[in-house]
Length: 210
Image (cartoon, rainbow, N blue to C red; front, side):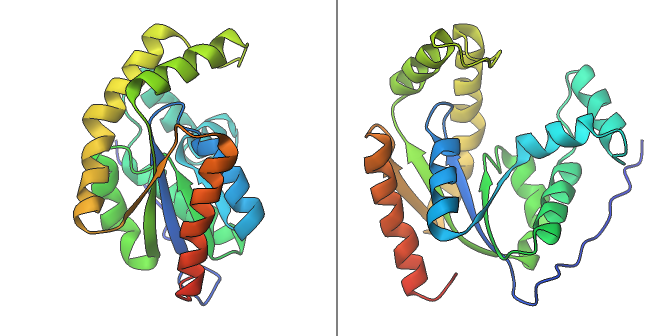
């Protein structure tokens, strides 16, 4: 099956600035992204959320295809994910973006480099780091508290942790070798984690890169 993808041109004359936000399940990516948006004016984009929204959109050019891949237990082609990210950046009218939970694996990274990397300025990778025992404890507590997420259970959490360890950690290591990773200790309180994050973003602003 051929996939026809649109090519987007950003409405802003400035090259969009991008920060990847990576961390294991339960590391607080969504919570911290919301705080960064409020404090620094970034637009928060979640690859997973964009795919879910597109899947449910009856007018989507990708909806049926995304549904087909998910129904068959296959990974949605990275070109679709990148196309959705590009479109979201274009229609936002902004030029600062947090991309949450992407790239998750080598295929994601290859697709990003092929389609998007030369159109944006990747500022740094924000890595929320904590031990696997903390990840698991948070997910179990979240599930027990009635999060409403079907994957907040022991079996699903372990699978998600394994995927992060085996597929996403090498991507973080790749960017670490390029001196682009900024790590924050995510075992701290939400407030303390954000205090550390603010230092990173203020440093970037001080270098006139946002």
